[in-house]
Length: 188
Image (cartoon, rainbow, N blue to C red):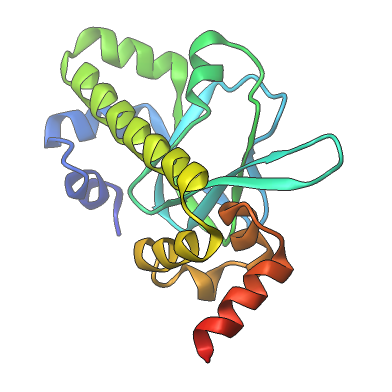
């Protein structure tokens, strides 16, 4: 999908799309390459043109915890770190070869200052992210692993074919062996 069509699909008006394209560059991200790394102070964000990403943490013991999956047409950002110019607490990693619209935060701030549309865009993106975060927290705190897996399958119907089961287990907050048991139970 070309950039203009993608931005139209996510409801960015034509004039604003042109302005955004002017300060952006199309970038290829290889499978398993990180767009943002833990500890990096982000100076950029992106819109996914094609591909799949995940946000994840690594604890002191080296265990990975997948915070979320980000698909085409969505924004990639370690927003609070970028906003406060502090190190990111998580990684943003491509799970397959991907193409993004890479946007300089500094240039975007100028764009935002000169056009009130971008305030609305930012509020909309933050609301979407907040609602996703709130739902995810509720599921992790209140639902068992089997129910969380059913929700995962419903929300991301084709992801199981695109992502390692180990990564799905880390998203569900369980060990890979537990996910194998749940899947085996569902097949019976």
